[in-house]
Amino acid sequence: MSKASSIVKPLSAESADQMRDKCGVFAAWDVPEAAHLTYLGLFALQHRGQEGAGIITSNGERLIGHRGQGLVSQVFSKNELNQLAGNRAIGHVRYSTAGGSHAKNLQPLWVESSFGEVAVAHNGNLTNALHLRRDLEKKGSVFQTNVDTEVILHLLARSEGATLRDRLTKTLSQIEGAFSLTLFVREGAETKLFVLKDPHGFRPLVLGKLQNGFVAASESVAFDLIGADFVRELEPGEVLEFSEKEGMQSWFLPERPKPAPCVFEWIYFSRPDSVVFGKSVYEMRKKMGALLAEEDRKKGFKADMVIGVPDSGIPAAIGYSQESKTPFEMGIIRNHYIGRTFIEPHQMIRDFSVKIKQNPLPEDLKGKRIVVVDDSLVRGTTSKKINTLLREAGAAEIHMRISAPPTISPCYYGIDTPERQQLIAARQSVSEIQSFLNVDSLKYLDLASLYEKLGTKTSMCDACFSGKYPVEPKDNLLRV
Ligand code: SF4
Image (cartoon, protein in one colour):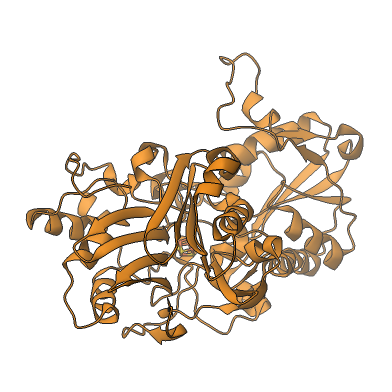
């Protein structure tokens, strides 16, 4: 367990990048073998972060935890899980940009405060953490990590109020941006669990029922693995408070802005077998592909076959195929067994970095007019390499279809996208990108038709496509 005593360097300009995480969280309340269940839940959420993982359990009296760098299966041994006693747990899988990859930044964060132990796991990114941190440091707070989440612990430790609920409300009203949290906090003789979403509801967070207890996770796919029943998605600004006496209580943070769930969770980030913001991700992606096919049909365009860039482009490619009656083929096979530590040779083999992951099937592709569906185009460099492989494999024509609008702005709410100048659609026109990618045509999804097709009733965050940010990215403004 960490104590709030070690000294860290003051935040540098890079720190805002280091503080940008995309992650997954889990919680269990009153379920047997909570640590083992959390382990399985995190395993199902592994796609949300592969850098490190952690679990903290509670037996009602004290917290016990283990965190480590690597995949969930590498971080926990049977022995370690057996030591995590208690029927309550929170867990976290972490992803960060390269600069922030340090053991000290792993979550759940865990400190001893004046009112007892506190532990927190966070998915999302706070947009004013740097501002708050500088202010807290002036007041004497000493930070141990580079992650935005730590400001929550310091604010909570300094907060005043008659009840824990008052203190938590005051704390959360000071932070801005995206936060789906699972949190253990001591109140009197009891350790309570809080599961909560920021008032905009940027990141997903779902509630499930397991035996006589509850579970919560970033995505419903975590419940499938442990046999829990899906109950519902948390509302934006909703707090679920779990206690010995009262069981589960739901209450809301006072701020009620326009909801802004992240549309990119449907497009790319969540697993296709999850239900996110009340919709099946797989079905949403198929609809996006169908919409691309509808647009092509209106223009009289027809291809010989459609392929999806594995794995995330495949559901939309299936949707395109079903709508247009164009045969779906694999076209490219992905190698799933590439570890983070794979060593690349020095420029020995051209396109090595792509070929190691994606290998085309020349027998399928030769002489064909193909539609290639991908979920997004960020820098464009990987797409260019894939298209070169497809050409070398004999494709006669390549028509690139992106099941998202052009990505023109970075995300400040917890998805790791590069800065604006590295986003190809922010710098180049569609015809310039088409030439860069060496494709015969390039089409994106239109944002308005996307919402219409998806039947979304609530407002969403689409800032990476529209440039309209629901919450001002204050920390980023501080850097320029
Ligand atoms: S900016 Fe894009 S990726 Fe970030 S929360 Fe908004 S829609 Fe999602």
